[in-house]
Picture 1 (cartoon, helix red, strand yellow):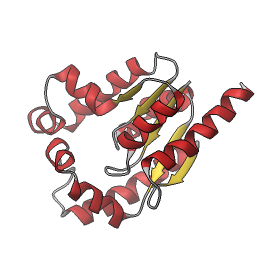
Picture 2 (cartoon, one colour):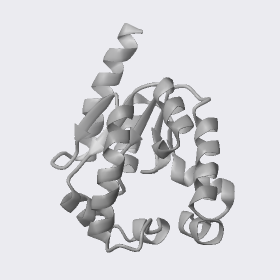
Picture 3 (spheres, helix red, strand yellow):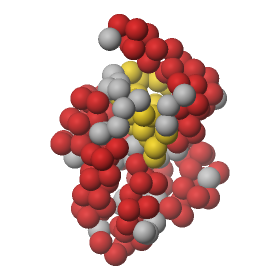
Length: 176
């Protein structure tokens, strides 16, 4: 079983994922880290030099390799589920958790994390709020289709969210 975390930039996938992995005593992987390690370049540089299509291909390849593992907590890039084959593989590997949050909270988190802005490129030429609102509108149906569980992460700490997910995972493991 692999527990995959999906959501928008700033939703807490990496933070929650690390806490969840610790609580389950499973390894943790971040697909963005894996892509950067495989490419030897930052995501923003891949977008500039090779384009989004090349990045999505690399991302899909890295995720496919990660999905061969067992008992893994996997934090996915916000657009990882845009490729149908990747979305299907993720859903087949175990529960998919959509970490939901409102636009204001997401914008505040991204603005407070200088690493995120430098690492991840803008996907449109729109101002940050407009880009986020557009992506939320475009991706919500995809996230809804992929998600086994949806968790509102606006008012809870990453540790609390991870605890909630860990309980659900343990219950699911008892049934299997």
